[in-house]
Image 1 (cartoon, rainbow, N blue to C red):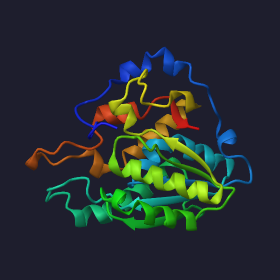
Image 2 (spheres, rainbow, N blue to C red):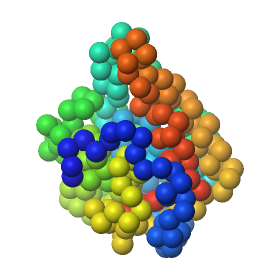
Image 3 (cartoon, rainbow, N blue to C red):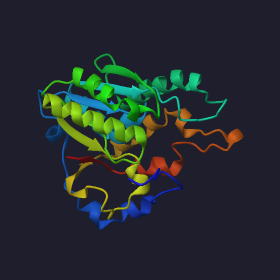
Image 4 (cartoon, one colour):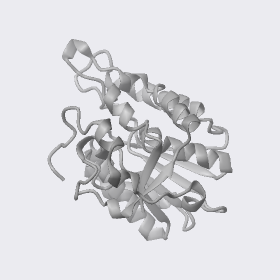
Length: 252
C-alpha cells in the first residue's frame, strides 16, 4: 500500500457509478452472509466505521433479528489533530455518543446490541496489533461472522484492525468478511490492488440508503473540520456521497 493514499478529493462518485466493472459484481444477501443461528460481529476501528462500512448490512441484520456484537477498537479522539475546538478530551466523549445516536437512527435495538469498547489509542493500533488480536479472539465464537475493515484499506488503523480481526477469526474458526471504506477514495473501479474477484455486492433499497445517510449525519464531529487551523472535515460531502451508493461491498 502506498504511503497515505487518502489525499485530495479522490476518485469521483461518477467514476464508480458509471463503471461496468462495478455493475457486474455478483450480488449477495444478508441471509447468505449471516445465516440463521449465527452472530454478526462488527469490528470498527473508529466510532463511525460500522455505519460507513456496513450501515445497510446492520439494518438488514436487525430486520432478520440476528444477534449483533459491535467492537469499537478506539474512541476516535485523534480525528482533529491540533484542534482546540475538537480536542482529544472532547472527541473521546462525543464520538462514542455519535455512534450510539447513529445506531439508533439505523433502527438497531440498542437494548439487545452487545457493544464492547476495546480502548486502544486512535491512530496507534498497529503498534498493538497482537494485543488487539488476542482481545478480539477472547470475544469470538466459532459460529460468528466477523465484519471489519479491509486489510489494505489505506488507513493505518483500518489495516491493523483488519489484520488483527483476520488472525483472531482464523484462530477460533469464525468467518471473516472485509469492508472497503477509504478504498473508495484512493482506488479506481479497475484498480488491480483491490481484490475485486473477492468482492460481492449487497444491494440496498432507497429506504435503507436514506436511513444510512441519516445515521452518517449523526457524526457531527466528522462532518465538521476546524477552519481556525485549516483542518477540513474528515467526512467531506464527496466522501459521504461515495459511501451512499445503492449497495455495500464485502470481500469474501
